[in-house]
Length: 587
Image (cartoon, rainbow, N blue to C red; front, side):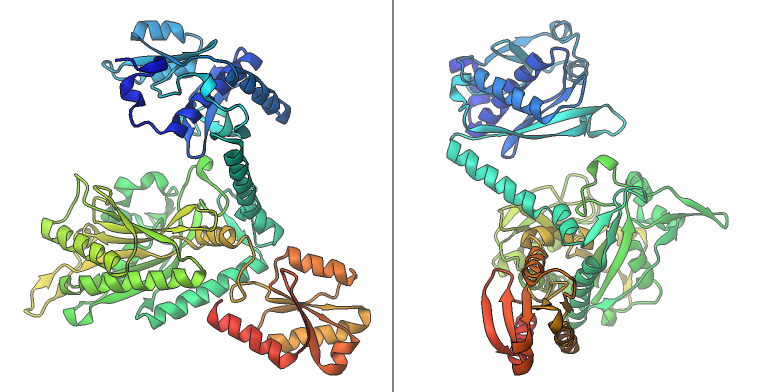
């Protein structure tokens, strides 16, 4: 049944308005690109969160002038009254219709024989499409969309397939909404961890050495060290023991764990040594299990909480790598809990409390939990699944966390909680995972001696708090935009002399702050004082301490924050007290 303006009723019902607007703009963009490049080969053009894109195989790389030209053509098309008309054709007609469009032909070929093949036409453009769309281009606001850029994209995300050119755009109902969104995009760009990491000299990626590998520079390594020490202190205080395990393991280990059956595509190729095959570890769990199995465990030994900052290696596709957020060498803050069935409830409650406490300390207070339950294909008995899932749910509710159910979204080996953090720009980041595992204890024949002397399987829980330090630091950089709080800042204060005569005193002040445990530098460069202040502000250093003859005579400091607030004549002891309070409170 066809509804008003060429939209089928089944497609229009419940379809989000902006979804249809953005989908329609994607088709308008394809029409504009074909006007500019008549021989272009079309791939796909879906709506996405906040916008749309379309992939094209073009005769030459796009330029900024091309995008401006496409945008002008889109405005002209959108300003017309071109209806989006749906039609249905058979497979033979579809193949003839798109005979000169190889990507469309592949899409048609991949459809099931009984799938309906529908087209949508507006103005001079027809596309293979399920819809839905708006009724007419007159429902599109020509002043409320913007092309936001272009990038390379492999066809179907496969790096073995052709590289296409993807044009991104965003579309809204009003110019005001568009302006607000573009400002948000600009802020995202300003906070981009790759940009900030480069500007603050925190890390780099050396492509000639290998993509997806992070090089932490001195300031970045200092930031990482601060977090690692905090992480270790909190884990020891929380009843964890830290372990360290090798970077490689024999083939037997990965066969037993199942990684070679289910995860081999993400593992680096093996190394031949002493007539054995060794693999770089993609995960730490099998090593922790081997420590467990190195001794006979009794119910009196449990629970065991073991954590490791273990570097693992995953062969991620080149097209998926993204700064520090998606890498091939990463340090996982893995923890594994081994407990009796009777201890499960308390252990899950404690690990969630522990996780929330750390995230609040880092400045993340807006969190959402997702509870993933048993999928159709799974291992483990019903009672264990029910007990584990119930413990996860009760822990979430006990801590007052908002949560959503992910029915059937658990791994085949156990239910889990995923914690998502919302940053100042409203973006959600999936970070902590608390995951039951009914698979590995069976595979490795893990057991503990119960009170009656019988051998029982322990419950095993994976817990990755940060996920990986690389990804976490990328998120943290974007969360703060590089303006870290005092306790995290790689450089907490820069001492700036008003002139060369004050260089010795500036060095002395920096050294005295260092003796009190603060990370302070003295800027003894040839630049003028104001230039040094601007440099320190650009480096997002929390405090600048300006000193000259007057300060040296009175043993005082002129304190300036990175936002420009100034305090004159501050005694050194008062400065130390201020710094100490901010570090201790982690404010």
